[in-house]
Amino acid sequence: MPIAIACPAPTGAAKGGVRAAPALDAGDTMEATLRALVDATPTATLLFDAGQRVHYANPAARVLARLCAPEKGDRPLERVADWHPELLSTGALHLCSLHGSWSGEVILGIGRGQHKILLVHLSRIGPERFGMTVRDITQESVRESELHARNAELEVAYEKLQGAQEQVMQSEKLASIGQLAAGVAHEINNPIGYVNSNLSTLQRYISQLFSAIQSYEAALAEGAGPAATDAIRQKLDLDFLVADVPQLLSESREGIDRVCKIVRDLKDFARKERSEDWVKADIHRGLDSTLNIIWNELKYKAQIVRTFGDLPPVECLPSELNQVFMNVLMNAGQAIKDQGIITVTTSVAGGRVRIDIGDDGEGIPADVLPRVFDPFFTTKPVGSGTGLGLAISYGIVSKHHGTIDVSSTPGQGTLLRIELPIEQPR
Ligand SMILES: Nc1ncnc2c1ncn2[C@@H]1O[C@H](COP(=O)(O)OP(=O)(O)OP(=O)(O)O)[C@@H](O)[C@H]1O
Ligand SMILES: [Mg+2]
Image (cartoon, rainbow, N blue to C red; front, side, top):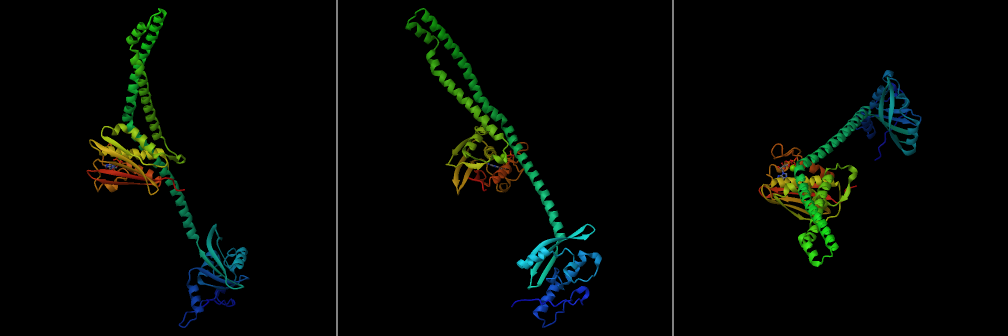
């Protein structure tokens, strides 16, 4: 059954031109019931005609009139403009006539530099009849702008926090390089040592070769025969020289390559990555270069078993991922007391790249397991662990939209599983 509110012609008899709502008695009509409902609603409601003459206004509308113009007191409210001259614009009324309804926020100046923000809704009820509801949202708007201001403050704080977090990450990385410095120096010193000794040998060989050339020249000048040149050859041990020089050179080249590689890996590792440095990188190269840097920490106690699968290039921040590999590999090494095995296994699973780093070290007790990713949680002696390794790794992997999980059996070993999407979500 259609519901209609009858709008009797204005009489102006009621106080201020507003008709009082009839009492709701038993047997009331739907019209009376609805009217009682509108009278009771806290939203200011007006019915008016095309000439903006008001036919009905509920008590909340009178309260609104006092809010809009407190100084005017109980004035007659016969026209919409009596509430406030700017409450209803002709534009809004025109649009409502055209489209059947109109809604918008209206800001009314109410004197003494104050204003009210009202949410106005207009509906065309009949050919010449309009309904208007008005809700005072000044407080809500103030709260909303306060909320916006808080939000902006929070965003600034969040950005600062992110900056701080990046700095912590970078310092942790540099601190771990600091810890590794002695080992890395050793790794560099070793090849430099034999390159140095090879150079001394080569220096001796070269002076032997020069003497050989001089002896050959003298022998040639004297017209000496093959017996004399043979004697020179044997005296200066030329056959051995010829065989040994290439070997010394290739060994030295290998040593220099090794030094270059460590220096390059270190440089890659220490680099502070920026958000625009996302590249498609080879995870295996990252694992290899990380193992290269920490080799001195692992080589005396762990055998490394690499089982590398067929991986596609992964969109990532390579130096940050290397930091994760280093933290996990260092933990694995530290968990092995005497001799053990560290396994590094890669594969593709469910469209993601999986990197499993396992060790057969001491394992993690069940009560410790849930806390290993907490910042500053460490079971290592004071001064040897900051407890940031896994917390930072967790942050980096999350930034890559990946996951890092740990499983462990005390006394048997630990497995860290890192899974990364091949491409970052756009
Ligand atoms: N492979 C592992 N085997 C046994 N325990 C582990 C292993 N990895 C992590 N843990 C435990 O988790 C804790 C937290 O590790 P995390 O790398 O965050 O900090 P840390 O190694 O103690 O210190 P930091 O890495 O800052 O030097 C460790 O103290 C250790 O108790
Ligand atoms: Mg650690």
